[in-house]
Image (cartoon, rainbow, N blue to C red):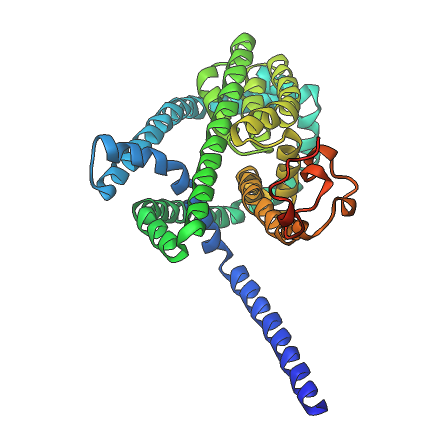
Length: 392
């Protein structure tokens, strides 16, 4: 008996050790391939968001799934290219104009004249630059060496974006087959539950995207109004840049504030201060009012849950965590709603089945109106009183 017990304990210990080693290996593999996994997650996110539009195009215009997906992706890229043209062309013209005026601006700044020179004199930046000329030159050399890393990061970002697009395209095309195969393996009631969970999860992601676009639209319109009233040139283009940057949760408004604030200070110090004050106030309103309220209605989450999930995910997962926090919280809520009540019902079945052999005295909390008629019990004891009328 002791030898059998020892063998059983040894087997359990080996199983535990094997599970720990397998978990460690899986975590190490996930860490080594984290970039690819991040691309897959982002691609799945966009695939789920674009899938309803592809389904609509397939039903009304193109019958083939691959062709309908291609139409949707091409239209999306054309829209993004149009936005890029609206942004890039004015910026290129402004940069060319600034390059032509750069020598004059530099001479005025050195002499303490012009808007830049007055700003440098007001904040005593010219004296600081002259006193720390060697340090600034050293920082300039470091910046030049870091340009290579910046170019490498840009190339990797472009390659990642193309990979995400290709993965999203393939996911949308193969989505119905993958879904049908998974449901066929599940079968029965489990397949119906998985289908329901998938539909509600897709609706959650679509609602998140629509809510995020609405928040960015509000930010862009408010920025345009402030810039136009302050007299900052190219207010529409800057507001569009701010709206695009605001798609990033939590830090998007800050990135937009840098762009708009810089344009405001180039126009005048007063305009720059007004723009910065606006963004300080607006970011608080967006993070603590607009985003929780709009996202709670779009994703059907409690506003407190929205805010806490974004803050925690941003702290743990950075930018990617902030982007995926709200849809992940919505999907978690769907899973809890689908599976937790079922588990509770399964756990209450034995207690319900045992009521037939108990007297009403075993249930002191049961209302009198719900007890068996005549004060009798159910089951075999009640079988001898079938023909008697109930006692009022």
